[in-house]
Length: 127
Image (cartoon, rainbow, N blue to C red):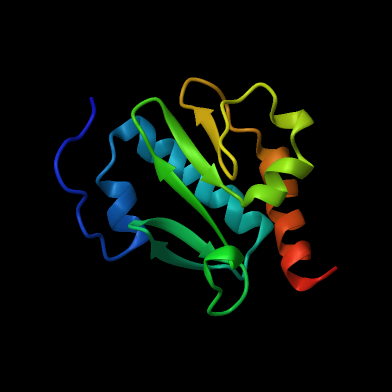
């Protein structure tokens, strides 16, 4: 089922996730948990009306990673440089310049996501 009309103005990540279909909620909560495992100090915010994680305090958009729910997949937005670094491992997934789509009918690649988040954090901090 695809929602139509204007996107609601959520106030928290929990509100955003709760508004999704059950299967999407499950995948988003799992992705959220994986991201928080990799970046326990990341602050949860909403950016562009979708869940985002500041990888540094008060991070600007290029210092965040985001996620979003869709009818058939969850989107993960780790930044274009991260996508380039992990291109070979992401070949089996539909991608955009700075995003990857993880289908709802397949397990999330937990270890890959953790490595991507950590890579992005290291890159931001200049390591």
